[in-house]
Length: 202
Length: 199
Image (cartoon, rainbow over the protein chains, first blue to last red):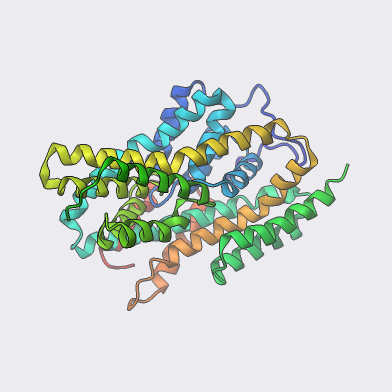
């Protein structure tokens, strides 16, 4: 399985050792996030995991899960929050702004160009079909990202089976029962955190 | 459509989006219903068609989904100038609208995200912080798979068989899971299958 899990045990905090790959400069952050954002059709999440964890290795799979959890419960777009967090960690405010600018600037102009083009070709059924096909693929991409991140759960304090149970419950409540995300996070997320809190007792 | 916008209207737009920013838990897409209420129903600054195409185009374009917010501001600006046919003036008010909505939706949430992350990083040894991060990890895994599911199934158009959508999403997921094939090839294949009417 091609997953870059060079992570320490899940119980140790994420403190990057010196020999870990990391962004060289705010300019590197800007470019990396621009390249990353331009690959993300229908959302950038699947790309973030592949670029940051598997290719650049700025984050381990464990760190990605933890950061994404924080990005998820904060207000604001998840991927933007994640970019801010990664940038801020390495270069403070300058890094955060560089990552933010990277993920937004060029894609913004691409979207504007598409909006102007769209007016001409909206009626063509092939265009609508292509959008549908790309949307379907991007759904598959994001789901696969979740499946890949099952591996780090093997070292979870709750045990692998219980962690899988939590993940399965969230999937069912959101995808099958279509419950509001806020309630699911509060109920299942809250229970999972409380249970973990008891397990990691010193 | 043509609308008249004064400086206090632009300010109101900024204020509304800053408010929505703080409410956008799990992404700006969750505040779409309220944006519709404000821009289309209450103020009449966008037509329903302009609103819907703003969301759809940003979904199809590369980049974070939040760009749909910028497109809404762009369209409000174009309307304020009397449409894109009005020339450079319309482009400028469009860019002004884009800057206002993007600043509004991002500034409060980004500030909060940076402050909270720094706090959590400083106190990362605390049992509560560790329990939160590790306790949320399996929740995130479930959410990712659910998001992919909901997105893929959203493409099963009424009056068409749903199984090609299922199959394409499942095959994509499997390829991404087991190989390192570049994701753009998969998106290109999806676009081709869709354009040929196979999905």
